[in-house]
Image (tube, rainbow, N blue to C red; front, side):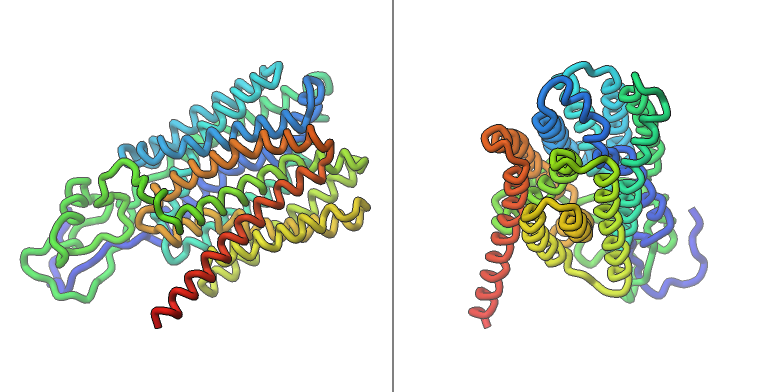
Length: 459
């Protein structure tokens, strides 16, 4: 440790680096999503014929995806506990092991039950461990640039979603007809090994925090923070600083918390948190479900593979354009993420209804372009809404959101299958998904109106 010789004019506080190693963490977020979630955009292409050969494709898709979403969501409870005991890196690496185990096991599935275990449970468990780890990590590395970094990450993820389906189609045709289903899964399973590198770079933020002057004159009994490199701060030093008196130096953005509770279930008693998390969960689940079944729905409308590919390219390209726009806007001005999400959910509900009015090619491709553009306003601000409202308790708030999301997902799979079985209509399935957005929009608007009225009464 090297002490500065020049006299100190004031105290320092530690703040997130807003860059540096944080950029590496952002790349980690991108890689993890590219090899876990992005392939779901081609779920129907990968598993469609297999599921049709063993039963109903719609039921198989909804149940397997429902199992994945449910398991990864409920894993959030365990992950919140683990992140308080272990580093982001250790938790993330554990998730990488489970995900790769599930991915390689999926190569050998013979029936729906096995697919639910390998894809739904094992991969869901792995993702449930990795997602909170990387999102909590990037949340700790950025404050001012958090929206920008998430926007950039989502942009690359969307590019992957555009490239993935045609790449998988090409790969399936290139590596052998008879075994192309399992050969393609083998390639995708191999790519999941990249998660080990992505999780391995999740270093503690305290190693990289910057010291900035607080402007407060230093007292002799204060710890000379400017003389201590941030990565040399031991856990004991961090705890001592955090638990010292109110006139001691403040550490901003540290991954050490004063609150030593394992999980604060008190958030579930907060009406604001419940309304927020239920709304986010409904829209998130409805979005993933729509992406997983849209190819099948278009195929059932007798569009050929070329038309469907073009439609999906338009959908994801529009999504990409909106995410780039979101990143640019976030760079120049502050955006209230909850308002962005509310706008996205409301407009998505409207255009989902419009989408099923007609079945001709032009109508479908135009509406898919609009829905793709609106998807950014659901996916990109989702974690940011939680960070915006519960920055100091982010890991717990995110973990409990995952539990709520898992509960919603658990109900959605059987509900969609039931509606399809009773009505034999893909349009009615889309209506179910649309209701999820409407519930979010209406409940959030009611909350905001109530808040405005309450504030006016106080004045």
